[in-house]
Amino acid sequence: MPTHLTIHTAEPGPVIDRHIFGHFAEHLGRCIYDGLWVGESSPVPHVRGWRRDLVAALKQIQIPNLRWPGGCYADDYHWRDGIGPREKRPRRINAHWGGVVESNAVGTHEFLDLCEQLGCEPYLAGNVGSGTPRELREWVEYCNATAGSLAEERAANGHRDPWKVRLWGIGNENWGCGGNMTAEQYSAELRRYSTYTRDFPGAPLMRVGCGANGDDFRWTDVVMRDGAKGPFGGPMIQGLSLHYYTVPGSWARKHPASPFDAAGWKTVMALGWKMEAIVRGHRAIMDRYDPSGAIALVVDEWGSWYEVEPGTNPGFLYQQQTVRDAVLAALTLNIFINHCERVRIANLAQTVNVLQAVALTEEGGGRLVLTPTWDVLGLYLPHYDAKRLPVHSDAATLQHDGLSYPAVSATASLAADNSVTVTVCNTDPAASVEITLALTGRTPAVADARVLASSLLTACNTFDQPRAVTTRPLDGVRVNGQRVSVTLPPGSVAALHFA
Ligand code: AHR
Image (cartoon, rainbow, N blue to C red; front, side, top):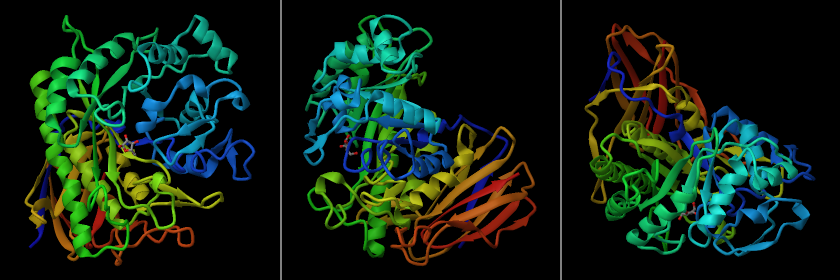
């Protein structure tokens, strides 16, 4: 039985904000050091310390924003540690992640230089857990002010012009590593910190409050009620975050990234699809307090989280990526696109060498490998800032371990050049699926069709076989009037582009 997808091309909906394809780089394991940053004396080719091949790979998928410096690290980070001459910066212990010595070689100037090299927006996470409103206020002023002592200090440190950083997180996971606060406590802190997190000329801020852990809907309810507005109704935040990871097994005994069998594949799909109910639930609460949709839902940490690879530091969260993670990425991005009225920023955790990374680098070495998740982000490029199109699907619902998820998940968008892109994934690891697409209101001409799939479900890219899993042309696309038919292989992600 084919799956029928009807795409209403004459009914463009809201814009799919390119920022939902954002990334996250924490001072954790080998994400920054020995990942993105190799340092200025490294034999690995770099531009001012940032690894050249990695920057090029991230530019290829046009990463729109990069969140930094954490994560849990953010609420233990004091920005003054990372400015001024590098050799004079304090060496701290990264207590959250492996207890390693943090040299502070990468600080504000270096990170913002990386964002300039990438052509992406920085998203700085402020310290609420162990910081002060004054410290956060001064960091904003240091980055964004045009005059005054902090702007002069910035200039003396090498950057005369303000960076005009727009995206600021007011803490991270303050219900946990960011201070173990209650929602009521955090709401009060949020109002205090937001008050002093000021706009400077030409640099209005988007303040992102710390949102819930997964399906903790009470947290969102309390923060929207008590923290999102000041006593006179003025807005305290423009965004509220949400963190949800796909963790097969339990936090104490996570499954490995590989090997896994068909049941292991399904577990990840089913847990990943929980994101749909989680986003829906938070969105409903936000709709109640903020019916105009002014406050964005910012899913600034998402992705798969497995047991670390054998022999690696448990505090470094280094894991492989298989084709299963690529399908998980597509499934999740489709959820964000389907809720793009409210979900306007999201950040995959994390960029390199940590969790669901888009790239892995050889420890202390020069080789780089791009994961299948990187390829999926490439397939989604045409959705950036395009208008979402309604998709009606009769896809079957699959059941696993008491959870359900769709056998086929699809999204579509209309770009400014009037082209239509349909991204679709087959979540079934064992069966191919025949898809028929009806594009109402137009006679489709297929400009491009690509697919990511592998006959081996555990297939991954390695330093020896760096492109074992990648996209290839999707063969067998048949057009008959307004209808398009194609067969998707088991466990695959495809993008079809219609001129
Ligand atoms: O991404 C790894 C960690 O996961 C982050 O530091 C934290 O915010 C979350 O718990």
